[in-house]
Length: 88
Image (tube, rainbow, N blue to C red; front, side):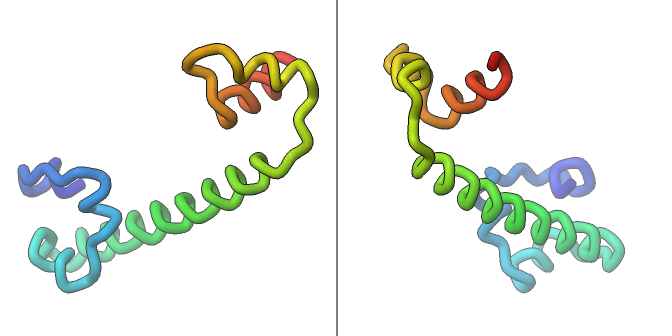
């Protein structure tokens, strides 16, 4: 949204770390600031949910097929669990 409306490119890490004062430097239009705040709240909420899900998945007892799957280079725990859910 910042890039589209103001031509400023920010990394996702930078966007996630913005507080209200920093956001005001980039977004001066009240309606866009309101939308930006909602977007940031959503990003922060979803990031928290993703961390909780990943933490839970790391504690799940693994079956033999899954343990074999994650030995393939490039397939980690989360991708392996995702593939297991899709194909089984």
